[in-house]
Length: 241
Image 1 (cartoon, helix red, strand yellow):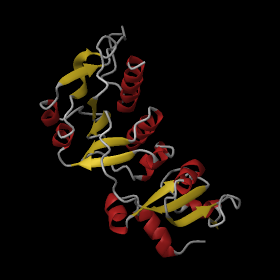
Image 2 (tube, one colour; image 1 turned 135 degrees about the horizontal axis):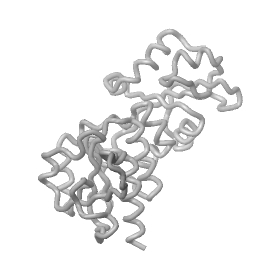
Image 3 (cartoon, one colour; image 1 turned 120 degrees about the vertical axis):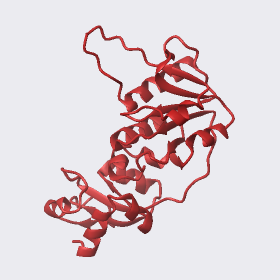
């Protein structure tokens, strides 16, 4: 069982200001929590409805888990972890950056994509959703332990300091299928609703796009940012082989 103060704290950690003030975040689900523990991320609290999950986990009932979960359907495991110490920038040859991505599921998926395609860091604008949001953590499926997220008030300036081309994914760029994709560059993906900010657009060295092949009169306005990132990363790796 947990105390009222513990329950209150866990629910407060849904907000960034409480995560930052307490230096804690919540992770839910067996896979995600197991990945964090295996990577030696320190936890303050660990609850499970499964008595065999972990020797330090407190066994609680499903009804109790429902009172502390951040989701409509609770997972059998919930952990409260310490926020990791901010890590230095690796400046890998290929950099992926996101500008104003608000949807937690999209950011978590992009973190997972970076991990899948062998990237160890992700550049984020300051107005991008916090990578330690519970929904981002869940969507990352544990990849948060291998992909460090850096946040910048001026994303354009930070990318320029890497001293390599900055290429934006836009609706007006050259087709990703016909252009020669540069392997040593920074690729920027914009928000779901507004794309890349005007300020950052003016700092781009080039633009590329995913052409639309739909023949219907009514066509989709845009492509999901996580889906677009997956296509670009796949093409980048294919071009490199």
